[in-house]
View: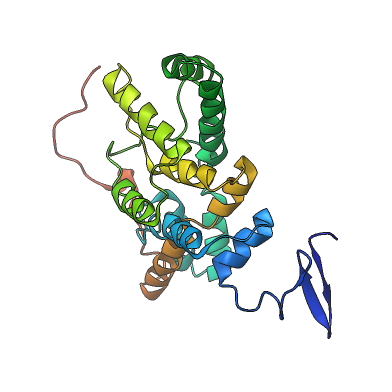
Length: 250
């Protein structure tokens, strides 16, 4: 196909290039984004893309997708099955992969509208009217996202901190904080903005972000597999004898 082919015993072609000759010095993420986009990225761009993944790899079994990997280890399933399942449910529609395409589409659509003379406030209100929210804004448990400062510090150092989509993402954040919504920007909006400024399309961004949580999953699997079988989260709420304040009537 136009994407490539394998010729056993001879060579492998990857997007028109000999994988073992022309592309042999690529690191993995460089090859990965080349496979997605067909484009070459500069060392600084690749460093930023690396960091986008690194900053969201948490080895915490309490996180919804990592929990699946940990449960697989506790149940003595295989690591590949457990991590594959954990990656599959990473597409949570509120705070996981389900916001990748909506967030970058919103930024691209809004920037285009602003370039054509639209007003940001009108664009935001229209988005709320249509979707009842804005992908990349708002976060469960904590409104502050600890990943934003590190990635923006690096982006600024590399010269990617003031692109048009990044500026727009922060302008939306300021507008929402000043209004009645009180929604804070989360990592999804920042990552989408940075990748949009690198020229990624919504589909390319979505596919690039697929492994973003993966580095945190094997540690969860390994730790659970090292513990007694079935010992991860073994108690249900019904097993706990609660003696605190009674249930409140609302």
